[in-house]
Structure formats: C-alpha cells, structure tokens
Length: 352
View 1 (cartoon, rainbow, N blue to C red):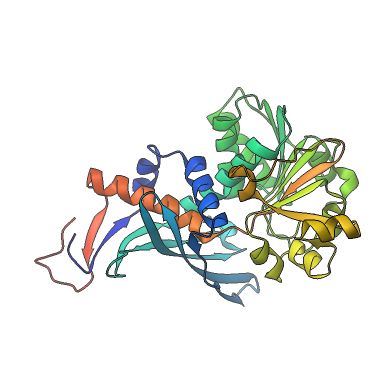
View 2 (view 1 turned 180 degrees about the vertical axis):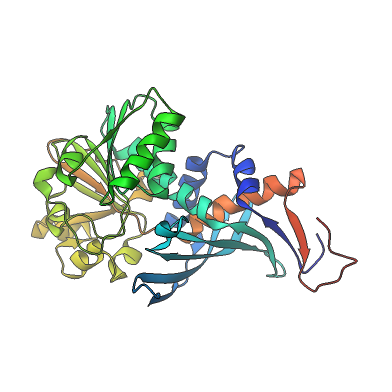
C-alpha cells in the first residue's frame, strides 16, 4: 500500500484470517518475548464515567510493541465498554486495534478489536491450563456467561477434547441459559450444566475460570477443591485469602499487576501479603507471585496444583492483541482482504 493508506478489517474478515492462525502459539510467543525484555508497554490511558443509566462505562487505550518473527510489531488497542451494553443487545466491550508501520509510524492496519481481545484472553487461559492446570480434568466451571465465556468454551473444545462438561453461572440466569443453549447447539456432545447458585458452580470442577465484571471479591478458598486451578481472568473475584493460601500464583507481568489499583491481587501485593521475590517469600512465609513467561521459557519448573490450588492472574497485556493482529494483517494482505482506505481522501488512490 501507499503511505497514508490503511487496511480496514471487520470482524468477519478477522475471523477468516484467524482460521489460519494458532492463537495459543502466538500468545505464548508474545509472553516469552515480553519476559525476555523484547517488548514495550507504556502506561495505559484510562477514562471512566457513568452513562445515562448510571452504569460504569470506560475507555482504555493501550500502546504496545513486541518482538514478532524477524521484526517488531507496533500498535495500539482501544477497547471501550459499558456494563449496560448487553441489555441493548450488544457486547459489553468493543473497539479497534491499529498496527503501525515500523519505519514511518503511520497506521497501516485497523482491526476490529472485540473478537481478537476475547480470543487472546481465552488463548492465554488455554496456555496456562496446558502448563499449570491439573494433569487430568474433564470438567470446567465458568463464572460469568458473556462474550469471554463463549470464547473460552469454544477454545476448551478445541484444545482440551477430554473436557466433557462445562458448569455455568451468571448473576443473570438469562445469560447462563443463553450460553448453555449456544454450547448445546455448537457441540452437543459437551454437557452444559446451568447452576442457580455460585458456590455449587465453583465447587463442581477442578478448573474455575472467572469472567465477570465484579468489583467486590466473593470466592473464598474453602470453595476450591484440592488440586484446583483458578484462571482469575477478571479483576476482583477471589478473596485475598485465596492468594495468601495458594500453592502458586502466576502472572504475566509482576509490576503491572502489583501497580494496578483496580485489581484485588494488586492490593494484596501492595499490602505485602504476596511478594515477587523468592527469598522474601521463603524467609517470611509469604505467597510468591511467579512470572508465567519463565515457565514457557524453561527457566522455571511449572507448579501444578497438588493438595491445594494454583492461581493464574494475568494483567492482560495489549502486546498479545498486537501480536495476533500482526498475524491477521499478514494473512489479510496476502489474500487481498479488507478495505484499503486513503486517509488523505484522494479518490484516485482509494480502492477496496
């Protein structure tokens, strides 16, 4: 493309390109690059307000760069959300990601972000389950039954065919029922069990995935079965005692998690109950936050749940979106997909 032209990829085109991509492999590669110091993650821009219904509404802008293949991928993710969006019949979160040309810094590809964001989040969970989860499991409990839950259910079928049952709970029983219907339609051999109460859903499986918008922690450690794995994807689902009592805690970036005031683990780390230094943890008997990238790189042995439970608590780095979008952009360019728009508005240069 010529300078100041940008390729726009809608969700349908993104999904077509993703058919040729293994998202777990891409996510793991980006996590490894970040752990090795081959990435840039400036502070995110965050703005929150209340909409006309008095509901929490926010905008998050995240720049990032990560080593990818022979070069570096540069980009930005803008993802906005309102908790009342599902009642309007739309997904809670949506937005776009933009990739930059490494030489000119011009934006060259604009990618619908909602699908990629959900995919990279679920792909990270699948990766941690592969390396940190129970050696054998055939059931998973999902708390929160929105878009992220549907994506997790889809990838669970793909990456863990031994899973035969998914337990579901949402504060809104209609969302629980809707996801159960979707799962039964897409994969009849996979049993979708709807729960009317939260505790029974958490206790039902050795793997618990939290995908809510809760701002108040509510899951105590005694709900978790011996040998359980908790993918604490959302911000504030487990009580502080879960972290204090965990056999192991894994994060994608210690500093990002610790310094974020909007997540329970950040508060627990700031209080000193969970530390990032192994010597301090051993000497003072405190819980240790480990870097998941060290496991992927072979620098550290994975701790799987034994008599207690293991918790994965990712920050959710924008470089994962950038890496996946870069793969999508390559597929789209090679196949000539998407609409190429001239940002300078020269009709002679614009084409589809």
